[in-house]
Amino acid sequence: MMRHHVILRVITKVLIGPIILFAFYVQFHGDYSPGGGFQAGVIFAVAFILHGLVFGLSTVQKVMPPKWVHKLIALGLLIYAGTGFAGLFMGGQFLEYNVLAHDPIHGQHNGILIIELGVGMTVAAVMIAIYYAFAARPPRISDEEW
Amino acid sequence: MQAMIIEALSWIFIISGAIFLLIGAIGIIRFPDFWSRLHALSVCDSAGMILLVLGMMLQAGLSFITIKLAIIGVFLFITGPTATHAVANAAFMSGNRPKSYKDDKQEEENA
Image (cartoon, rainbow over all chains, first blue to last red; front, side, top):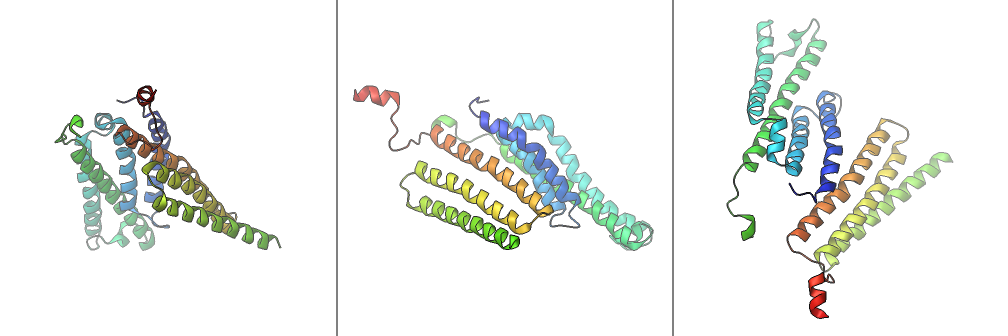
């Protein structure tokens, strides 16, 4: 890697932690303030994309291997669908949150948190997978031909 | 009385921040080459952003929103100059030079 990007490297190292923390804030505070699973997933993926842009694709793929990413996409969708079927098995309709706990308000609270967790996982993993797919393409023209 | 002073201070901050941003926008359009445009953008952006955030913090009073605004200010204060540095570095690497720039080789040829 090029050594002259020292400012970008230092700032990236400082910023990645707060970005992930902010993603979790948006994720789990999403039912009281603007935010939710989709936005949190995108912010979470931004931390990894920033790491990949500055430190290189192979470095970020050591942190988040592509096979984990593909499993996370499926896992998030499974959590979403599983919550729906859990409502079905506990005596309600598909995706009915009221039956998930003893009283409907707690049930809706739990349901929306779990659903948003699944959405966030899938969105973050899809964003990282799209970045990997684009960044892993070999360049058509070499740097000398520019 | 105190509330009025705080109100007036916050509006002074917000309006001067807006003026900074306006000057920066005019600079982007009017300056001749890439480097002076980048200079106008980055400096005025940082100054205007800080003043706007300060004004909004005074408007919000002592609350959770003030802390959020302070965090936003710190973030933009770090990332804005970094982005400018990355853009300028990329332009310099790809061979773009300021109008008055003379590297050593040119000076030797002129001498």
